[in-house]
Length: 433
Ligand code: HSE
Image 1 (tube, rainbow, N blue to C red):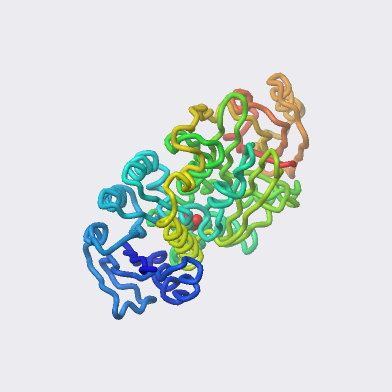
Image 2 (spheres, rainbow, N blue to C red):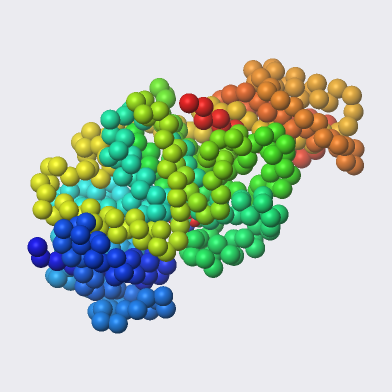
């Protein structure tokens, strides 16, 4: 069969990895795809020292790649929003299939991109956009398609997990670990996307759509970052038998769909609490299968390239298949997406870890527990630490409560003259089967 020609736009960390994997494993890939896959052209402003591009046509004009009549599949690896969107739309307009690792693009413009792709009868594949090398999109979209999915939770930002792991294990400084993640090519161009949960929310938005058959709605995701996690909280979590992880959680209940990214305390024995460094993991609960977990490298050149190239092979296979039998972009048939609402964070129910500093005097603990009790919040565990400068640190684990109720209770506690500063809160999840 005639070889398939691809054009790679962007030769940075992931672009370079993709170039090298396509070249190195060309023979094995052809045996899988049923035909050769040739890199026809690369669009990049700068060479990548890790790639030997001798013999490959290189242009600085990525749009020339998207329009090149020789090319069947455009691989978009430039990242970002506007130019990437224009590039992908240009490729689609010119009848090219698209493979992308750009989660921001899919989470924010995916609805429009998929519609254009359908009209042009082309595929847009984006496995590499979520959890790097883990084939979790394929697992949810195809492997779990018999299930009604109840919820999913994931460590879906490698940089953030790398930072939390190094801080906990080695007591390293936040900024120092972040700089290392940047040097290793894990972090986003704007690393606040990693540490403030925006990157994870992009990925969660995609996973939620695939799991529940809802349109992509990134703007409704709740995000809270890890930059305010203190060594004190990490230590108290350990004492209580928990770990703090930055999780993306999406759960469907009768009222709607939760879509939230925030630091979360999870029991240390939970498998997902033991996912360290740049590794990612996604835990999915389906009504038939129960819980399944997908684990692997969440960032980095070749792990991400692994997913990009797998998508290329998938697209190559569909070139000769009936278009009605393609796997839909968002797992559900486009006309079958439902309009279940995304729930505001105030409506979300979870357990809580609270840390506060109270003035050391009789009755202060009773005052705090009294407020919680009046607000209908049950306490699971309570720790009182050593008094320091007349302030006593109090740590409380609560049972599940609606966020709105917890907000009201915290406001009352903070209003007390016997409480110093604000109350730190971390949501707690148990993920019991
Ligand atoms: N910055 C992302 C991360 C890259 O650290 O997970 C992979 O999407």
